[in-house]
Image 1 (spheres, rainbow, N blue to C red):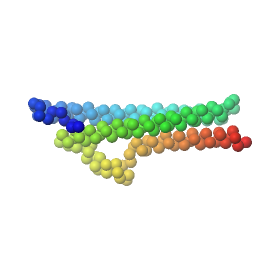
Image 2: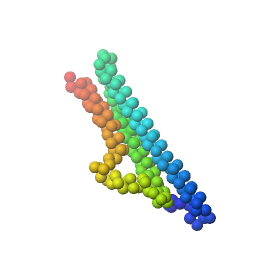
Image 3: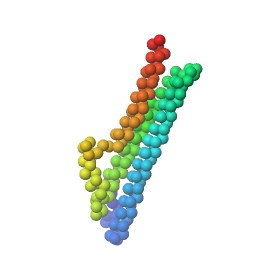
Length: 163
């Protein structure tokens, strides 16, 4: 599939460059919006999992009836939330990766390839000393929370059966 659809058509060259630049700006803005949505997702799920952890802490410090079942249920729910969170982050990573491939293609039609040049300076994401992929760092947070909730489940099960 080709990026440009104006080949062989009667299109004034000055207008074509102007339209390419406008479309480029719109596309860069849409990539930024994806990043903003990803940040909002992180904020939402971080708030949700810390709230669940807080509820578990409250339940454990107060003597509630059947608290072990509530803690187990909340922990299992939190683990599922963490799994969903990681999947969403991976989808956002793929979407932004695709968007930047298109941006790099559009830059071939412009005087400067700023994003491509920056990506080259960062080793195209292959040199961890130059650049750590944010999506990999972000996925560590739900992994840590998920591990915490697995630990809570193990402790609760041990308390139930190892008396």
